[in-house]
Length: 140
Image (cartoon, rainbow, N blue to C red):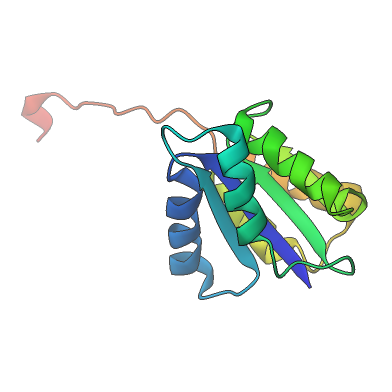
């Protein structure tokens, strides 16, 4: 199986998973794990290990993280390396809902660089300034 694993500070990963389920339906291949406020990286490592306990050597992982270089991502990568899962892991930082949604919908159809380029393109295209243009009161 190919899993989408979300890691973040606080409850962002869990909230993003909830939003994904609203848009993509209930899925057993999405795992969310957050670093609770006040917990150490070592404590998060135990939380993360528990969340991925069902992932095995023959599975693949798309790992999305909130911040590149943050404790949740670096800790998750260390745990995955300990389990020997890094060769089958694609990692992307700076997650947002468009990135996660595209990842969950495309992870089983695209591989490697094609997958990464597709999901990054969707994620960045979704970032746009929204300008409100006010009309004169006479036009209302």
